[in-house]
Image (cartoon, rainbow, N blue to C red; front, side):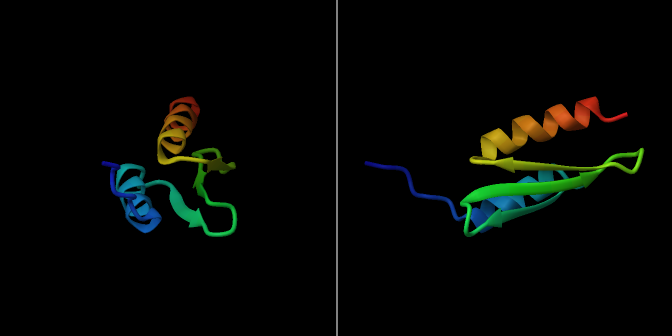
Length: 67
């Protein structure tokens, strides 16, 4: 028995709730999760991730490294 596939829309909502400073979306053409955030110094950073788990890891790393 396989697990049900979760809709990217549902995943984006969950990621957005977890990372409120990020603008997050699903790229239909790329089948990747994307996100942008502005650091306190004004620099705009972005993420492209193949999975929600990868997005979480990368966003956490960026947020931890943000001045």
